[in-house]
Length: 314
Image 1 (cartoon, rainbow, N blue to C red):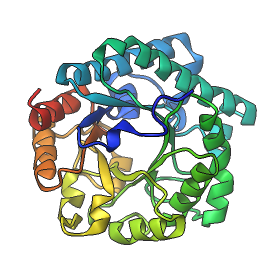
Image 2 (image 1 turned 60 degrees about the horizontal axis):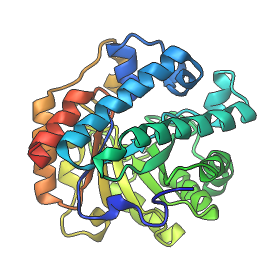
Image 3 (image 1 turned 45 degrees about the vertical axis):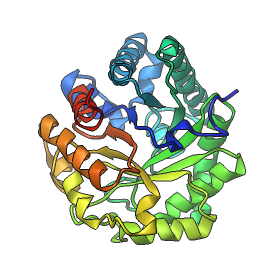
């Protein structure tokens, strides 16, 4: 039984926080070896579960101090069939792991019941291929068939919504939205952007959102930008355009580096957390509908704390 799937609380005018760059935090700050950049195998390990509980507790505590809601995002960005196969997870194992991640977040939410703020639970999807430079572009129909099993699993849990992150081209997003509509799950679609503010396939953000909305009767609850620094996209957001109003969430990178530079980096570039917070406050002043705020690669608790400080005065 979901709490919020019929009326997502983050669609209000209030600010919600979410977490930061889980994978880079684990790899670079905690020394965890994440094969294929996948965090979900930690769900099968006692020490891994301890790390995940600590991670979510720390981020939820920032939201509690700021007295705002918090979107709990599952650790299943890589838990789809192609990536799962590389890690030894077959269809049944992936179904189990996608259920287990939601069970963990239900427990985290229960521990925060006294906060008296909403904690919607999101089942996270990632792209089938490389989010920065996909070698294979699916049709919308192929994307629908590929992502539907993971989405159907989440629909059979206490997840309140689906969030697909680091999408590089519109057709994959269309298929995900259609599969979510099949099982009556709210869906959030998040595109990643290059330093010029365009998707990796060369699409403009405006065109990508319009293409998806046209193909799905505007089914996505809202859109997000993730895995790009605010300096990469601030100039392409048009305060007078309808498509800009469809974007309600940001999970930005701490670094200003391009995707190619990040791929080649051997050390973590966290950027400047204080500047990161100020950049989000500047975006919020121009686009007050940006109300769901977190981080992506290179970010950690410091960045979320700075968002809380600059955007919420917490």
